[in-house]
Image (cartoon, rainbow, N blue to C red):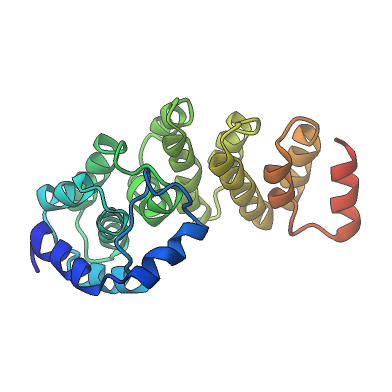
Length: 231
């Protein structure tokens, strides 16, 4: 199973209708997220066996319509980028593939599998302006990537990019971007409580409620009530 065809066949052999139906709870529109019915745990285990899969084969996986196949590609990319033994050339290839084929990374879970380690990990010691371009995209998964990538910086205690990207997207109307804004702010607040509180107070009146509620989840009950009252 060292190529896209073999890995796809392995997934198809694990598929079941019971598992496929479970996904409808999270992905009700099967037209945009066709599933074959493989548990994500099994997908992730298979990914561990193919961390050196060539970029050309990864692109073939991304090109396939079935969600689990693309999830496998993203899982391989994320795990490979995060591995300590992975060289810079490989990490750069993965980053370039991720951005070049973002049209195939078009669901929230696919973004979350790879954005932190592939995109954020690549930019940790580089110019981070590509995140601003992603945040300005008309394609909501790219905007979510800009947010999720900042977790790579927060692992190092850095919150500037998290607050900056969240500020750019604080009024975003896409539900999966709103959730990511809240998630990023909540995590940034764990590192810098004062800056977090100032941010949510400034944006509380205009942020979508889902984003705001997620952002203040770790605040004390009375503080949450006070911030929500700003609306």
